[in-house]
Each structure stands twice: as C-alpha cells, then as structure tokens.
Length: 486
Image (cartoon, rainbow, N blue to C red; front, side, top):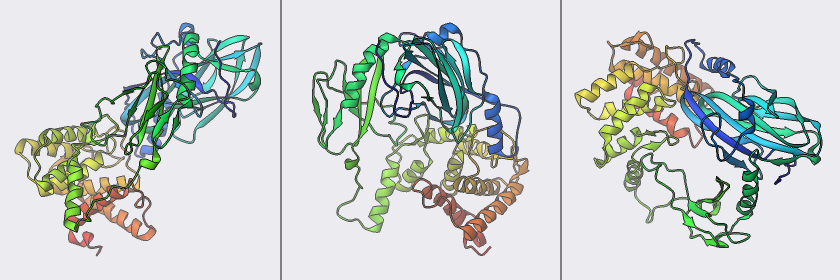
C-alpha cells in the first residue's frame, strides 16, 4: 500500500476532493444589518444530510461523488488544507467533499482536530464521529474529534457545506494529535494513490532556474507545461492554455518575459499539477522615450480601451471603464451595445460590486447619449437597484466598507437626481427622496473621512475605486459639496 507521512504539525496532506457544487440560495427573512443577516444565514444553511456507507467508502477517480461530480487529487507538500475557495457574486449554497485514508498497524483511538470555515460532518469507517455545526466567516473554526481507527486502512470522509457569498473560504483540514508515528496516509482509491505518488514526487522535485525548468528525472508520459496568467480581459479569459510537451525531457528552456508557469502530468485518471512563479520577471512597464502628459494620458486610455471587459473571476466582465475609455478615444471597434446590455443585467441581478457599475454608468449617462430603448432599460435598472442594506431585496452585495459605502451613497444621490419623479420600489422612496437620503449620507461620509482619515485609500486595489466615486461627487453633484463648502 502506498502511504505518505503526516506533515510536521500532524496535518493530512493528501485527499481526493469533489466540488464545489454551488446552487443559488435565498431566504424570505430580512435584516437591516447585512453582516448580522449573513451570520444568521450561515447558522441555518447547513443541511447535514447523512452520508451513506457506500458513499463514504467509494471515493474513486473512476466514479463521481455523491454530488454528481468527479473526484480529483489534491495534495502534496505544503498542503495542510483542502482549499476549494471561490468568489461568489450572488448568494449560493456551496457543498464540497474530501476523502482520505489513514493506515495503522493496530486498532487505536486517535485524537484529532478538524479545522474549517464550513460546516463539516466527519465520517470514519462509515460512521459519523463529529464535525462542525455551522459555517463561519472568520476566524476558522476548530473542533476536537476522536477517530476510532481499525488495523489497516480507514477511510475518513469530510462532507462540507457553506454559504457562498463574495470571498468564500471553502477550506477544511484534519490535524492528527496522537499516534502520529504509527499513521500513514493514503487514498480511498489505492490504485490512484499508487499512480499519484511517483507523479507527485516528480512534480514537486522540479526546480525553477532563471532560464529553465529542470526535472530530477526524464518527465513521465503526458507531462506538459504552459505559461499562464490572470487574464484581465473577460473576452479572452476562456482561451485555452498553450501546452508544451515535456515527456522524456529533463529540462525545458524558458525565455525571458513570462512569469507564471504550470507543470502538469497525469496519474491514475487524475491530473497532478504545480504552479510556479518567476518573480524576477515581474517588472514595471515603461514608455520610451518619455511621453508628454497628453501622450501618457492617451496611452493609459488606450490600454484600458484595448480590454473589452474587465474580468471578474471568469464568471462575467465589468465593461464600463473600458467602454468609457473607448468613448473618449472615439473607438467603436467593440460591440459596446452588447456590453451595455450585459452590464445592465448585472446591475439588475445585483451581483457583488454592482455599485461599481452604477458609478460608471452615471458617468456614462452624464457624458454620452443613449438610444431610447437603452435609456428605458437604464431607468429600470437604476430605479430597481438596492442602494443600502436596509432596503428591500436579497443579494450578497458588500455595502459597508469605505469604498462601497460611498459608491452606494453617491449612486443613490445621482440616480435620484436623474429620475426625481420616479418611484424606487426597493428604497420605498421617490427619486427626489432618494437623492436627499443619498446627499445626507455623502456628507456624513465626507465628514468622517475629514475627521479620521481614509481607511482604504492607500490600497492599490481600492484607491482607484474610491477615487472614481469621489470624482463623480466632484463632477456631478451640487457645487457646495464638490468644493467642500459644506
């Protein structure tokens, strides 16, 4: 039987995993405080459906899990936790499973600690032996359990479920506290473990040099590598990686310039991969010769315009900044009518960060005309938006941070100003009333920042976001607020 050691802290490092499976989630109850509401949703989302004996023992690369999804290998050195974390723009119920096997020479009760942000039911030998009742946002939950191990191989199955909302930590780990020296780790699928062990050793032993990727032995059959990076353009993010064959090779020459590299081989029906980063190749971009202010400004707009729609995690794109840049440059090379329709759908769905889109849309409407049909769709989207957490509706938008709060306040003020006589049903206000509400909140926000300083403004991620909302306030609201007189 192929076995691995626990890590030096006693964590299991080798699993078969399945999922995550995400299903749209909603509840009729409401709360004026979104953070408190989401904490309550976490307390009720776990169903704790029993795992049947056959399911608890049958984790195999050749069969789907109880979720109807394939099992895949996850593990290796420095992998103390199963990590299937993703970003969810709308509320989801997220389920994922992990299975490992502990091999021992005799019957023994082992003390262990279960770590997770999710609700977890732990099964050992087909029987539930403990778990975590409800998911948490942070900090990670810790639960002591006892694993009743029998001589030989014992399958340990983690059935996990959590609330998917924004940055969701679908993480679980099993730490063994007692009897570590007698415990070997394998997989429920012994054939998979036997195939994975040499493939994993090969991938982990690869060394990254400035000009080459070097292997400890000739690369196995089906070994490939590819450059990869986080694609900023949603229109391009689905393009397949360009794989380079490496089977039989002991090194792969690497030209300068690219930074992210993925090494991959196959074993027992599963993929074993490792991502490496050439940090020395991450260099600032410069223009030569040094451009004038106007040339540099145009170059910045050009770079933004050349991206069709800013990628938001691969699920969809946020196109408004790119559309504004193209309008500024007079560039009609993209289908921005479709991009406008796609953006309005995201606002209507109230995906997380839809307030960013509302902010950009206001700027677009203030600078450029739209056709009558689009104008009607825009009005519907803005009048049916949710501008604060105490307004009606169910979604997973983040309202309360420094950048988001200003986005919502300014968006409410400016949307109300655009449609003063329209009724905003989720806000239960007319446009005129919503503008007054937003105006008061903008003033409160400015007073708070002037008194206490910024919280996020020096963040490379949030400076541009907060700045965009502030520029809308300066450009499009009454002069006394823009000038700081009130």
